[in-house]
Every structure is written in structure tokens, then in C-alpha cells.
Length: 194
Image (tube, rainbow, N blue to C red):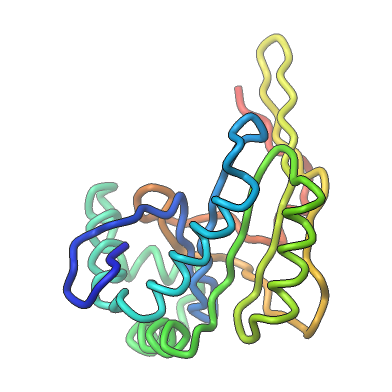
């Protein structure tokens, strides 16, 4: 993510998704053993959001998405249509992404295996104060068995302030573009990895 106009990458967000309304969702994942979860991670995410809305042209996002699709041997228009429906206006989708970035309409998601009370309060405060941005904290537990690994959402932090659009089928990047899981799928049964 650049920190100046036409600048090179300065930061790297863990995951980036665009929901069906092209709202950018920036996801930062930490472990509770990483002491940076407190103030540093919150500041880091605010850096990402502040600079993304100013210096992150949608053309760069689109090019990154298209390159990732190409690396997977998939057509970007096919991925979007598969994720968001055949009736999707692809050019309109990317225009909406640009509009959302320019308006500061972004979603910031903190994911951790333990969200300290101090960070929970910061998330709640920011979510109330940062309209039209949305700030969410998600606590995820990992359970490991003999041959299974399960991830489960344990709780989340978000102070309700307005009705929000939830992603149904976001497209995005998880350290590389692709189709991501939706935020409201977090209420689904745990994901099991073998």
C-alpha cells in the first residue's frame, strides 16, 4: 500500500476484500502472543485506511486482482461473475470501489485469537466515530485434534451505530487476489482443515 501519490508499496495489509457493493475491507490478523495487538495494530490499521483512501487508485487494485486471477488460470470477469452474479456491471463495480475509497467508505477488521478489553473499547469507539467507515474486531479460536484443525469465531466487537451492508460474496486478496469468505459467513459452522 503506497503512502504517497504514485509511490511504491510502503505497507502490506494482511487481507483485502471488496464486498458486493465494492466496499474495501482491510483485515489485519494477529495472535495474542504478538504484543502489538494493542495500540500499534490499531495505529497500523488507521495508517492503512487513511492512506488507502487517498493514495490507492482503483486501477492498481484492479490490476492486482487481475494478476492474481491470471496466476490462478482464471479470468477476472469470470471470478467476479461467479462471486457476485452474472448480472454484475463489472465497470460499475470498479467505479463503485473508487467512489467508496474516495468517500472513506471502508471496513476495518481486526482478527485475533484474543481481543483485549482495551482494543475492544477502541474498536467500539472508532466504529461510532468514523462514519462512513466501519470498524470490527473478531476473536477466532483454533482447535487442533489428531488430524483436524478447526477455526471458530468466538466473539466480535463492534458498537452498532447504523445498519451496515454485510458482504455476501466478497472478492479480494489474501496476500494475493482471489475470492474471499464473507463476513456474515462467520456465523456459519466452524471451518475444518485436514
